Image (cartoon, rainbow, N blue to C red):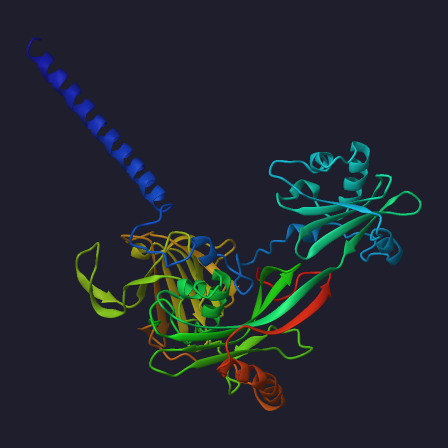
Length: 482
């Protein structure tokens, strides 16, 4: 009896040790998964952001699809349009007399609309009637701090009009009619469209260089989009390169409210060989306009030079590379583009999805098939775009996923590869076909239109305002980018 007791305890102790060991392993595996998942939400040091605010760099415009297969509607599109969308002339005269008093105000942060009107001594009953009428056009719960308004009072102190400015191109007017009822109308807006020319030199990064000449990040980004098939602005630009740009600039009440379309642009590398681009759209055509060179050749190619707007190359196309994790030499038939986690990844050309999922060391990967025997691969993604799945058709510049570090990756980056007729090719050295060249009468119309812009773009006159045009409009201009 005495000799069997230690053996039994030893068995129990071994069993307890084994169970404890398994529990520790499970816990470590679980924690490791959590750590890996949380790491994907961090910006990794290797992925250096270019100059300029990150929000501006990744704020995609209308030429990029924010999510494929899902169309989000703006809040204003869901609002009920007022019954009368034009100001009645008789009411307009009533609110512009010499004996009337006007109070200009602004909505403060955290303030309700009725509280705002009360702050300017407008009675509760009148404020309620004004806002009830205004609410037929706008969502009163979504008014933002900084929105401006004007209240017009008669000599007796009666409110006869309220003009509410939702934005630079959206104004509504509530006017008291002869019967004592408030009527709603959409007020026309007068703006000034200035065609402006700016010429400058590259002194560092593109965004910083544009800022030196008073050009914002949106203009710089549009400029890079125009020449994206000809110049890689992440690696090709040098100090001393020059540029010229002619674009629309919008003003209201003497203050700049935003920029519009680039009408003409030129980029000149230091060694020579300038590239020119002119915007052209056929009159009466519903198709989107584009940018063309002096001979009518489109600057849009069948393939983008890169699926990312901004990146840093960390590994190039080679037949022999030391793998950073496996520590063995093997071919790397693609390019690694470092960028922060969550950076949008675009389809470089029109195509169809042939694979989405997990694939060994590539992690989350999307494979697209294109015309002409091409396939493109996008590996190490953080996640796929909503609705993306096998068989779906995608368009050039459509977002298909977001940069991550899934699979075998030491930091967030995109492994981008191109397959053509049975083998991988260097994405940055392959020959890319131009999508379109204007011909016949269309080319003649383009040549007639661009000649005037070319003379302005290439002359030696000091840059500045080329022309000024006042317009009265009821909606935002089609080319307005803010």
